Amino acid sequence: MKPDRLHVLWAAAAQAETPKPEAGFEERVLRAVRLERLAAPACLGEQIARLLPRVAVAAGLVILAGITADLALAHAAPDDLSTSLTRLSEQWLFAVK
Image 1: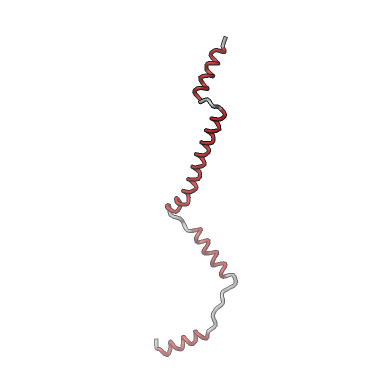
Image 2: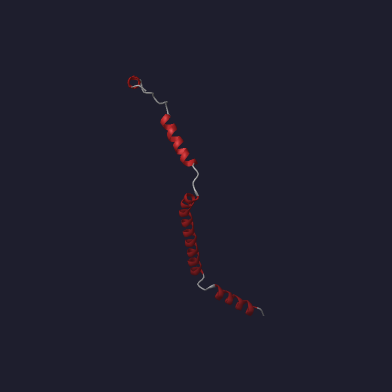
């Protein structure tokens, strides 16, 4: 382009009024960006990274429940299972007359 032609174009652009965005344009852009982030498929590594803390918490809760059940059963019945079964079998055997 010729320098005079460029000069005329730049002058016209400087005098032109800037376009105004439509009402609610910012909200629509932010909503579209948010939805795009949610809709983007995650790779396997990202899915595992999101799932791992939940699995760790669940495993900890299972271990804690097992320890609690063991302590509760030990407190409720101080004898172990084999001792209790032996006592029951001896009582049953000698109970018959």
